[in-house]
Amino acid sequence: MPDSILLIVFGTLSIFGLAGGVLGFALAMKHAKRPDGELKMAVWAIVGLGGLVVAGMSSAYFLIPILMKRVF
Image (cartoon, rainbow, N blue to C red):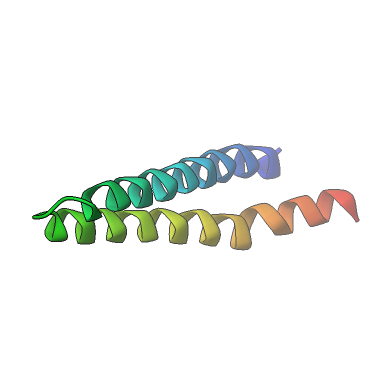
């Protein structure tokens, strides 16, 4: 039972982190094409990197071990 709750919580967190990372990098590329968009580009790139880090850490430390326990 606790594994199912952790799987749902960290699976959702991982999906939102991945979506935030992709959205952050997409907005960074959008602002990179503008003449005065360096600061916004840097901020969105940091947000995108943070989202990918959150997604990677939650899946590496929680999702993969729980799924490996269920399979093996």
